[in-house]
Length: 240
Image (cartoon, rainbow, N blue to C red; front, side, top):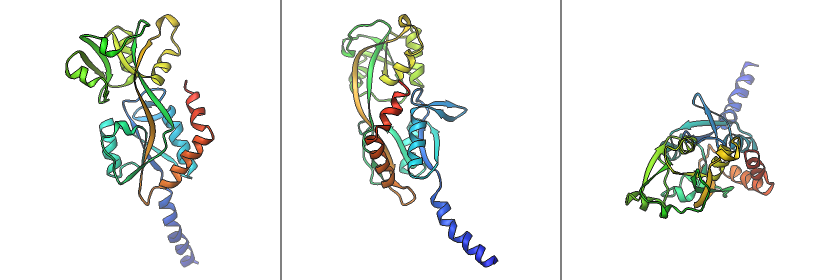
């Protein structure tokens, strides 16, 4: 009897090992509606819902690992995380044979934001400080930063950038549309910040590590099915 129990335990061990949680990265510079971080843990937001749903689709739990943006890609390359979501091919300098891109599930639009409505292009601004997120790249704006036509002023999160713009720490800032809509949603009309022009539009996807420990193809198929069933649109609509 003891021998039978031992065989059962040993036989179950590989299955238990295979069912470890899927490790997703959370960039600590993100803010709502992408994610709310409390005490170093991701507690709500689009990415929390998306990644928990994606893991459940393949019969796993999601482990959400909060880390600095500059650590995320290295963590994927070295196998510390399994999935990196909310990333664009336009933001990653090179591909890697160890991971596979999913289909894009949304588009991120980055916009120039101001306190006064109007149509303004960044190239028309001279010698003004521009609110940006620490570590984020803005290819269209980089020549303007290099020539000192625009003076980049970083904050740690997108929410902090918008707060500083609201308090007139600078005249203009860059934000993605989702974050700007979230910031404005509980403010009266006269206090809302305004989109002045679009500066970039990028497809957003997930990178999945191609490894025997990761159900890579199952995750890719799950994302295709979620897209076809309208789950991504429904998820985003909850945070607009």
